[in-house]
Amino acid sequence: MENSKPKTIAFQGERYAFSEIAAKQFFTEEITCVPCKTFDIVFEAVENGSAEFGIIPLENSLTGSIHRNYDLLLEHELMVVGEVFLRVEQHLIANPGVSLSDIKTVYSHPQALEQCRKFLTSLPGVEPVASYDTAGSVKMIHDQKMHDSAAIASSLAARIYEMQIIKQEIEDIPENFTRFHVLSKNDKKFAQPDKTSIVFSMKNIPGALFKALSVFALRDIDLLKIESRPLRGKPWAYIFYLDFSGNMDEERSKNAIRHLQEMSNFLKILGSYPSGYSKESNKE
Image (cartoon, rainbow, N blue to C red):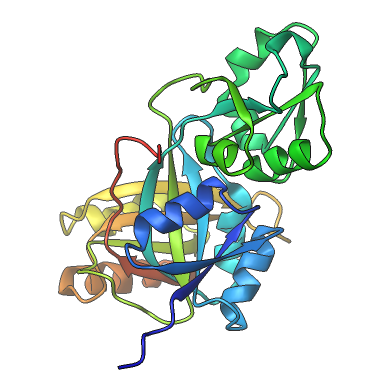
């Protein structure tokens, strides 16, 4: 019998970035991970079929939402089909032989730099510099043989690129988790969906947001998150991203959405999917 081809998963960053670690945590079988320079390219790869799935970070428990990805969810016609929570342990990584006193610059993704703000401010004379990726920063320092610089990234990135960890777990708070969404062109079911994400905008009526949220309260549907974003082209108007418990096969969810549509001028269902889980650590 011919072996099935491994699923291809697009992610933003270099190999061994946290997004790739999250993908391997979500997909328990063998997968082929496709690194992409930007989040836009991740969405495009899934849309054009060069990757079967994409994985994107949506929010971090310390630094909040990754707004670019919320905007891309609105702009593209992809479905959210899964969710995973990853414990993020950030490490200060440098070339072998480099000591903490040698370091003048620290490179990493802006989110990682923000997650380690207290540690970085404790290093006088060290400049944090935003890079497009955590693992990519390690690769750059390795490839360019930079001996006055370090990167913030995962222990896996340090091991794969044969770099040394100067300081372990430098994030401000140990309870540091990132939530990722798994994307597909089709409504793929991995397990029984128990969570739904939508995006909508309201008509200009008194008490609009209160009325919008009440359609869920009236049906005893738990709201898990609500996020507002500016509506492009309409100053001081907003769209709302909302997660709730339930799936669109349930009658009460269907009724809530029908009710919400009556007071909305735009509504899009991003997907129903099994809610995420977390492991104790991302150490491998």
